[in-house]
Length: 230
Image 1 (cartoon, rainbow, N blue to C red):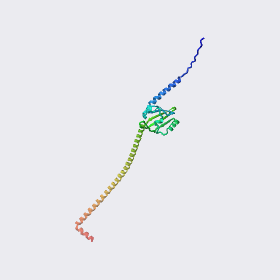
Image 2: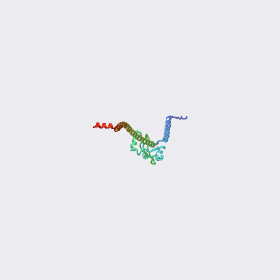
Image 3: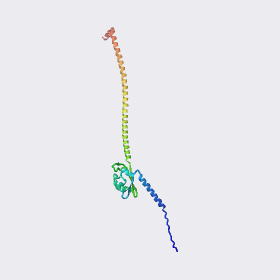
Image 4: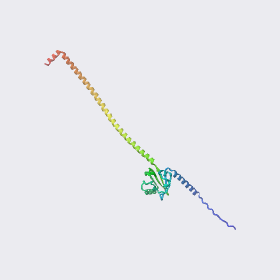
């Protein structure tokens, strides 16, 4: 008699796991593409050791270091936050809030050039993501705009002062014109009165001279006058 052989087949549905693996792979691909093509400088740092795990191209272009020079280094050794104060305090703040933003921390590139970046540290559970955005040109433009506005403000104040002075001078000129007109009226009146007085005086003097002339010529009249005086 031939012995019977039994087989037990167990089927496990791994569709969900496959979908999850595919989704994870797609997510990692999207992240890798975004990481590599981002215009901001990006670092991925191990949260425990704070060693740099990954660097994108933009970061190397901003600071002038190569990928090999940065990979494996301690984050605090690259000097990105050396002007930001206590690094350990920054780490604690990141642990407490999951996010840190620095917008006034000057950074020097490899060749000594000063940059004014915005720096973000983001807690990614196992890793820390560092974003560096170079805003040097924007800050320079803002400074130039501020200086230009200050120049315009100063010019406006000068114009306002000049306008005030012109208004004051115009008021004085108007008053002077009024005083001059009044003086002219008085002078005209004085001239008119003086002319009349002179004409009357001349008329009286002429009549007197004429009378004297007639008296001299009229001898009998002179005798009569003398007798009247006696």
